[in-house]
Image (cartoon, rainbow, N blue to C red; front, side, top):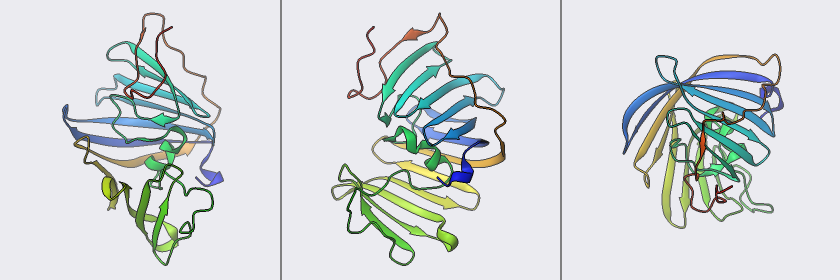
Length: 208
């Protein structure tokens, strides 16, 4: 993310299609710093759906529909938010149309070749894609071994993410961007919310 992106808040319109059905909602991203962001989602009637507060590599996930929450670190892979198995701090990059991964240190293919890029991240996953004028990202594919897992493409004003393994497609576009006047308060689970496991079985246990 470029430095000038921080200290901003952005509103996105999002549509979802997957095993649970289809739907639409709005997402507000408050991008405080490289280490802190806050995301809140509401349905078309303005009712809160979920919230995510990330600081460094730790996150708090609130499910306002089921009155539950979970705490997790490292990856953004929570049941109910099908935006892909990406590191927590890369989610703003994904929403803003950038590649939510980075080359492993010393990767020999880290530099773009013309308008294409091809690199492996620290976990050995392969990222390939195409760049437009000015270095904007037109598309990318994430593969594990020889198997493509996740695709992303920009089509007109829309970003489209397809996850074959989960049978999910998510579309979104930015509709508003403005300065963030002050850092938002840290989220905390309401007293009536129950702590539950996050969706990734590799995440720490949610038992107290």
